[in-house]
Amino acid sequence: MAYQQRRGGRPQGARRPHQSRGGRKGPAKKYIHPSKFINKAVAPAEEIAYEATHRFTDFPFGAELQHNISKKGYITPSAIQDQAIPHIVEGRDVIGLANTGTGKTAAFLLPIIERQSGIMLRPSVLVVAPTRELAQQIDEQFREFSRGMQLYSTLIVGGMNIDRQIRELKRRPHLIIGTPGRLKDLIGRRQIQLKNMTTLVLDEADRMLDMGFLPDIRQIVNEMPRERQTLFFSATITPEIEALTKDFLNNPVTVSVRTSETSEHVEQDVIEARDKGHKIDLLTEMLEQDHYEKVLVFGETKYGVQRLSDHLDNRGIPSVAIHGNKNQSQRSKALKLFKDEKVRVLVATDVAARGLDIPNVSHVINFDTPQTYEDYVHRIGRTGRGGAKGHAHTFIDAR
Image (cartoon, rainbow, N blue to C red; front, side, top):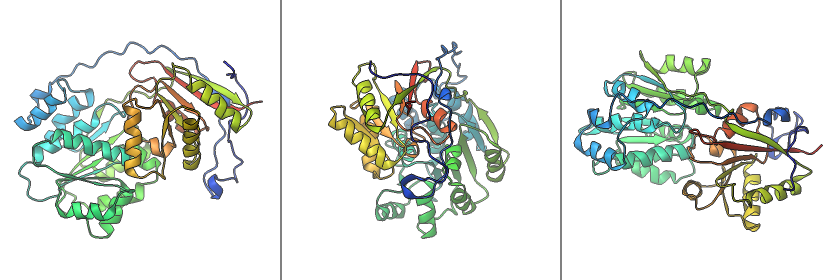
């Protein structure tokens, strides 16, 4: 193969501190030494399978909900479901420390659905998520689990028709599922009343903080009654997260099933490229090989990501792109094509890909280096999951 993988070089696209993306001031990209992008994979240690203490049929759910759970093929709960559901059913505030893809959505939705039958004051549940895609995934799961139960939800996210969302709110759904920005907007317009809310769910709280949503979240929570049940989910616990839990929760029980997101099981290497054109040639050459089965390519800007996706399409490699300029239905369609393996390549920006649970990614390719090493670890954590072998390649400037 015509590309070199070796140490050395300055990361592709690394900027001087005063430069900014797209001509605007932004945080300077931190220099990451290329050696940090190289790692021989360690074979995952044999994980001891979690032994659940319940089956779904043990939980105090009605016949309709049990039917919908069974229809989805759920028999034995995951660790977060097994440990969190009993506390949520009891009405306790819960801090759930769990990675994406551990089944936490069902852990909070199932007890909430069970409690909705017969509730007259609606809406009574607010679910806040960091991204449109995650909010949509939660909404889809709610609809599947509550099928035939006369329960309704409204999705309140940016990038979708706000008038339609206002019309749906007037029908008094049981659940409002949304992202902080659009929720705050509609609360400000007096279209969402939070005074009758009994339950608040903050999902992927660490991502919401990363994305600068803390002021919005505080404003939303301040509008809610103090007497409520709060369910707080995060993959990490930082001093800032801990401070939030003290402010928002009342005598919570903590359920931790978090596994360390390690990059040790991911084979990592660098690819040297002379310039942008050479980089695209090398990427195309790689993606033409059969073992690149399901590939997530990260780019830095929404324009760059779209151009790269178009370029791959023109080279005969079908791909889809998700970034901030896509509307919600375009992003959902692209994600579905990739998840269902109708296309092998998804090109994305960091923000668009946050919070997404995409199974069986064979390779992560950093076409542009990330802003920080933490972002790098987050990116490559999309591959090598569940004991499978993962691969990560990062392009850097040739020496």
